[in-house]
Image 1 (cartoon, rainbow, N blue to C red):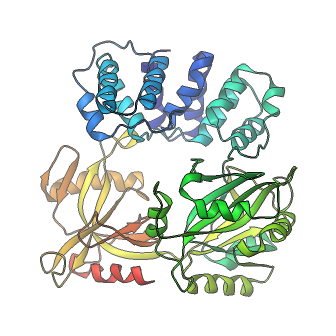
Image 2: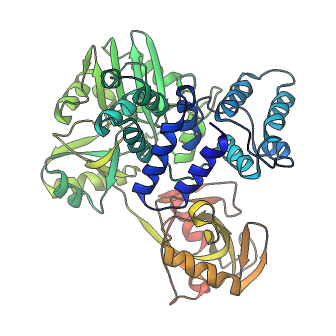
Image 3: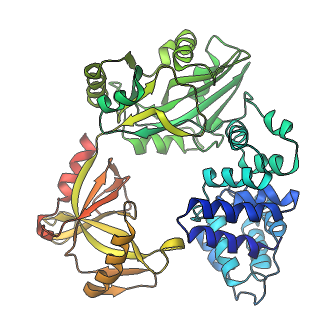
Length: 507
């Protein structure tokens, strides 16, 4: 298949909000793929090539993009083969070799194909073709039951291989895909609620557990062989020797554990999230140690527990890893749930997760069986600039640059504004339309992708907190920022200050 056919479909998916239309377009594409094109095509669509990272960045990609071709000739298989070669290139002269490979292929690519290749290489695919939509499309294209396809995808952790099986193998072979110790599965996800008591109304009797401000991990052990995976199923075993030793010391032979890891200070209080992530992402040994905490077990010594109720899984977890269990209580009492939530926050954690005690482990899915509760902070900030959108938002001003007031001039001019982050989350079509019409009226200057505006517009932003950052002059960056509403009733000098936001670092 020509790569252009994939690009056209990706653009069509990105331009519609209809899930049904996305599924139809993707299913039609999948039916036309050759067997050896299926897994690569899935990887390209979700921005996760099967080769993983191949050692190229913005500078390399930009330098490789020359004059585009007039006609589409590059195939899906050729792009996949080039990524194989890039991944295999290492050692002296590897940078030049990668550049040569990139130029060879992109010289034959049309303008839109070049843009697609760049997004694949840089992990910036925003087609809306998320795993859930693609899973439904795979089931539609292969005429297989949706639950069978979803289970195979979640238990294998490989959507591309699942698509290949669904489209080319028998239904029995697809159904045979099961849990394998050593092969990561997609983690179960949680919905959200405003309070622990509200969550308990949904779940009934539940385990109310601390939600740690750490990094999600999945630990697999077969004998003395231990593997640790991230929530995105990347193998980070070599980075976490202290976690490996903990898992290796448990009284089991085979096990799969779900949990979190985080760094603690000398008083046992969680260190800031970015310190955990800095240590978590380090290939070399670091002085900061990571402590594992586990909240679920999916397999123990030949026994799969995915379909067992949470009560059974917690009993097994207590038996094999009591010292490493995340704190929590089983209750039906809203007052108890709220007390555990307060205790978690007082301990420096994010909040709680309320889990129905009779629920099974729904790998890769977000449902009402697990509900997370975190305090939400809202602040009034000032819009400094707005970026032009892409995909479905092409032609609209979308991503906001946000600034906090600096009344004393600690980080710039007294009374000026200090940038603390960006967001496009929470913007409705009506707000996008309004922004696109309004911001050019107060424009100060613009670049190719950004319109800089007079700092006069106040917007209410919800955040989960802040983290230390060297990217912005105020030394902090917003965490999970999303737009609540514009504040026409507030003047920019009434915006929240950088000092107020920096105070969240101590919370």
